[in-house]
Length: 284
Image 1: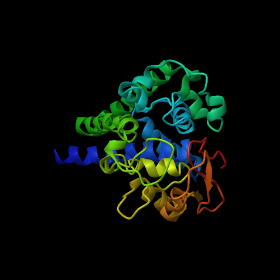
Image 2: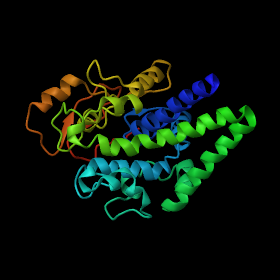
Image 3: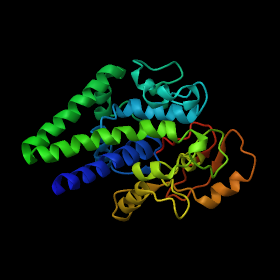
Image 4: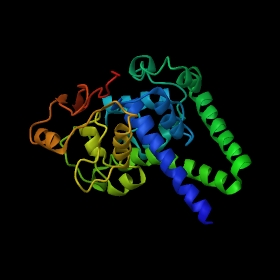
């Protein structure tokens, strides 16, 4: 039982960081740069948590930031809790305002992501993700036994709930607190941050989507940020975008325009956007 528990926690952390570091902060927002093998390591950790095509995921998330909490947002709770949680996944094709050829043009020609996307067919892509995820557990079963395989699959399904839960909970104002004056319903929810490796500081994220750091205050623990900084210290990351609480707080005291550019601490300058905007950077 102890080995099962240890394996579950280890797989949960790996898959969760795959979603937060790989899918979210790396390929969706390009908040840091790293070699391709590091990118694949984290993205596949998220993929094995049944997250689906990386191109599809990044396209949907970038659309979420561009149209946050409007009728064009793919999963705003304003238009139904069911849609915000998992209803948006059931659609079989992109809507006219969501186009991977323009919103994820940095990903569409990547050979691995292109294969996993299955020509943009959501149904095929989801089935492929499920098949590969289960095949991975069969390999674990053969090599390490049923406890390790079961721990991995349960951790994968648990991590799958992170973005689905976050889409709902962190966009219902009464469930959290708002530090920065963003033009949306995003709030910080501490227990979501614990489960989601720092992603629960969601108002912070919407205030600075291009920042690799979302835990802005001393008590806002951000496991994903610590992971990125550790990778930078050992030479696996070459550029990191970082917005600070002081920068965002100064802006929060002013009227929030449609788009505000915030300077960031980075090896190269990459703007961090505040407000509703196409907030990711496609520069490498």
